[in-house]
Length: 325
Ligand SMILES: Nc1ncnc2c1ncn2[C@@H]1O[C@H](COP(=O)(O)OP(=O)(O)O)[C@@H](O)[C@H]1O
Ligand SMILES: [Mg+2]
Image (cartoon, rainbow, N blue to C red; front, side):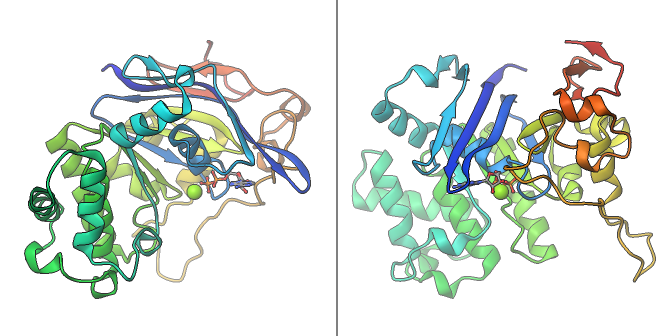
């Protein structure tokens, strides 16, 4: 499958009160045409910042550099800021965990949708309304004509996330980035929203990047998975490779931390011991070294090279003996 997006050596640094913080430390990642790519890792590992760097959604305190960001064959790092903004607006959309923050409580749902449609398409208000109703129908909102006139607080959490998804689809993006889209929802609703994303990907042939801290969510959804830790992409592979032949000690720990139905109720979940490093005390070498039971001196000092295990799977760990890239 060809690449829709190819990220080469992405680095993002924040200027903070305590000095410079290297949040993303050289990430290489591809998003293929018509796939769901999962990005997984604990909170603070750099999942959101990676994709916000590509989207241009970070505050001014962030410095983003990359050797290249190739999207549909064009290098985005070569584009001018203004051109880039409208290009991103048409091609990519990103949705977040809390749909309420993206909606104005004083405006109707119809207002939100027609506003986005008129921004990106040359249509009359009437046409925009017709498109909006059709979008709501496509994301599974019943009686969309009536729902257009209602306000955000009249929608449940799940229905609000559907509205946000329909807004993201208005400009017909080729890439949809869903950042923890179901974390705030209860389990049944979570499954419905994930099903919707999967179905939309199939119907529209778009690519989806699904960000989650939950390995359980990844299993049913993704074609490929990228595992992040401490601003580094520590392992990537097809979903089967990650679940059945994980290589990196961190990936293995993440898999052990998935709650299992067969575990008796009340039994303790196996969480990963220790806390992730903060940006200000990051080891020079492997970011996982401070929590890895196998770490040696070398792990703390030297960043591991990428080891390749198949055309689709690779990991960064000194203890692994795959081919060198
Ligand atoms: N605006 C910011 N200023 C300073 N540091 C930030 C900012 N946004 C994120 N970070 C830091 O960057 C790191 C990665 O964050 P993020 O990508 O949001 O993690 P997650 O994997 O949970 O999405 C974290 O250590 C976070 O504290
Ligand atoms: Mg995040």
